[in-house]
Length: 277
Image (cartoon, rainbow, N blue to C red):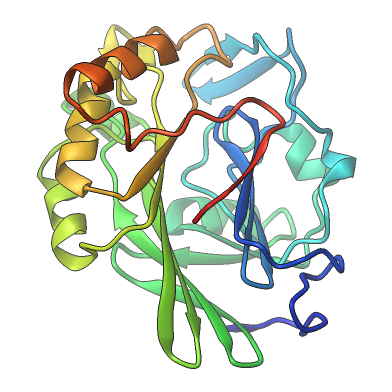
């Protein structure tokens, strides 16, 4: 558990009103304000044209700039990192982010980033790390993820989804599910069984292709995700920032429409801020 200094009543650490909101920065990087907590996910701040390194000699070039630069990131209560890939954690984030806030991630990533001076908390699946402020608690629960199957799954770094569960005086008021870079499957049924009431899902899409294999959800898998998890609303991210992404947002929106799920999906423009509830 991490105890976070309290903000002014009804405000976050930067003095801004504590409306539950999401700002889409780019790729899988979003800024979340939940209650009086401010979190950043999967920080990716390299610029258009620069390379993101994926390990094993693999790399991909960024196609779009993030909406803000790393020095424009506000004061954070925590960073949530789904896995250690160069399009989710890059050299700009490593050099520019404050190392003091807790960085909640997989055990694999936590071991490596601790050596770089970050205050890491590595989680096993279904375990959680809690942030507290007065009578508020924000739990970050590690959820199962499958980045790839077969031989490639043994090569890619471990990935986790995350459930952000906000409580006031012990009463849950909001649940946000960050999918991480996962394919669909029975592990999502397990998530729904444990957490049937998810207010918002942030979905990593793109149909990313690595070594002739799909390693993130494409349009049909995105629809399958919605059917399995059954969130009240969903925001798609991670679909057009890099050359390895082959399934555009338009394909997912059309698939959701055909499945009569388009009322669940809430596309967000780069740099746009939307309320979570």
